[in-house]
Image (cartoon, rainbow, N blue to C red):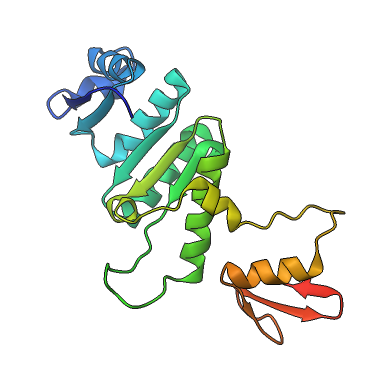
Length: 195
């Protein structure tokens, strides 16, 4: 992100924001972001973060990242934003939910959510609100080209190479089993691949 970093201290002047989007603080906040500057808005009450971000999103029609302290706060802000905007423009990038250095694999649901979010961010050229946590931002992310290597797109009526599809499923971490019971598994029965 280019531009400088600005901190707008909203602690002492939050009350006018609640009553009027035409307040000086909303104008300053919008102008700061419109100029391409990153902005740290300190002092915004938890209950109003979704409202402020939704307002900026509607005014500026550009993507924003909101980094919150944890999953509970992220879920709360996402619910609030969706009540203002609907869910089409909200992308949640979850943390792995494991500590650095822990020798366990993340839960398959978290892997799927994270991959889905990263691919959506890389593919989608329309503005979006990206909600994430401090922990999620601490993990390295593969380059978009590498992410797309891990995707198998299937459309109705489209032909897929049977052998290549099995190989790719194995390469991206799917386990070949006799019968699919869980996410992350696939099986081959005749000319059918169950995922």
